[in-house]
Image: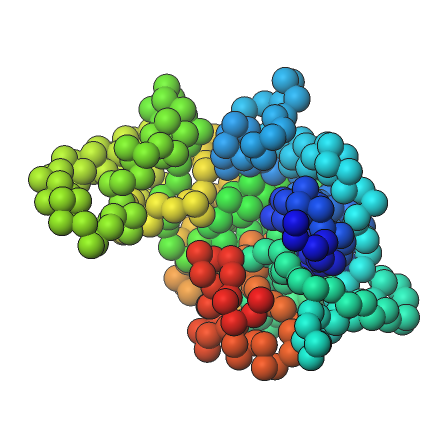
Length: 387
């Protein structure tokens, strides 16, 4: 039998929980190190926002050995996912293997084998050093909020304007947005979720400013067919060129034969989405082909989004911020690149996240991360040179 190893899992999100369970099942001594006050990753109340839901249905977004409770909606809310993850932690006895409010501040290879992790507890200057045989980095792609800075931004804030990242949306009080015009920057799922939620909080108007149009998939395509039956199945998957095996002669021949049918299938899907969502009316038809853009990151249509367009509570604008201005009378203006000037008191930047592993020593960064920021990983999981 393999000797039990001491394993550190950095990050208590979905992947971290799964990794910890797998190592514990194999008899290893596991410790999850999570910098926030609870496990859950992006589903933690500190990271999510009101109204957030999964993009995948509950039978797809789950572990194989535990289902959601029967009363969970098909597309679980953030609160339901967090509860599910908590149930999974308890099911596998991982509670005592979690160290919360603890951040890894340094990591170094030990000459005799393994790794030395330096950790620090939130609110304390005390650091602790522990040796582990293996380390799993499960901090995910949503490590640090990605903020954009534009000309005049400091003056805008000094004049009383508020600029928040989408991860800070919960920090906004109702009084901050009530009867105020809010500009949401971004076209991702979080941007549309927040835009649709803002008018329920009494915002005086919402401008959803998007740099480019992207394809969005409704939960039910044509208001009839569940999107999972069209997108998350093998027959649809093989139609994407990136999934084909270029070394297969037979596969290449079949692809050539099926190409016209596949092309027509995607054009019909695009037409259906354009009609169903009214994309031409809102000038939101993407320039890209859906098969070139669709991926795990394609946003699902936020419920109530297009209805809020119809009511005028939310207005979509294809542009981006050029600069901020404060007039002599104190009026705060957000100037867009398309020449439009929007009077706004609050700006929410749904501009994504950056991946960051600040605790890695320089030599490990050079081994692991390319100059363009991509990680050298086999099957997006392992770097053979960093056992």
